[in-house]
Length: 208
Image (tube, rainbow, N blue to C red; front, side, top):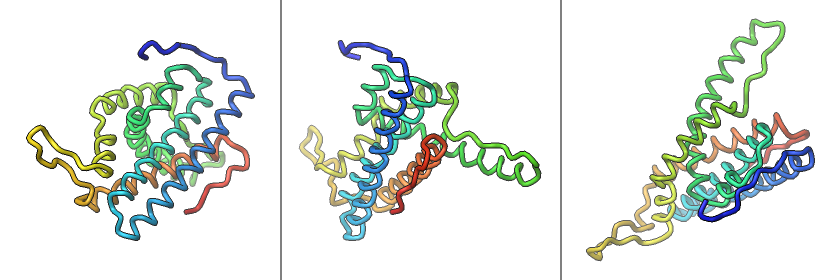
């Protein structure tokens, strides 16, 4: 971690509540960013809308990671510093996409089973330790690629190569790619809301 101090804290009830409080704040901020991004998209500010919706995805990812920390009773320097780096949050976000697909399939399968069961089963919302470890491994590969971070930068700045030729221009943002980012952000929002409803009493989702 580049000479940064390594530490591991015991997750006490007080610390768990504090982590959940941060998750709630990150979730609320992500919703605001998503709302602002939609306003920009309506004004045909495609590139700026795309950059802002990726930021909302990062905040949803932060909230999700924090909720996993409270479930797994984990709070340490590796998680702490990862939460402060955009590419790492984006890497987990990319991995979460696959987990979310699994969750939807699992949720629908259990819902179908519950139709014929006297004692309904409760579907898992947050990943198990093994699933989480697999997500982290995949996220590290995505971090090296840093595709989402590079794309976000291309939506904000003019890029150029060694031959002094423009390599990217925000004014040429692809609306379909930006709309796909919006779909991913909405998926994250729904996933985080399901996780929060299972962890935080009296949680109210924010309607955008």
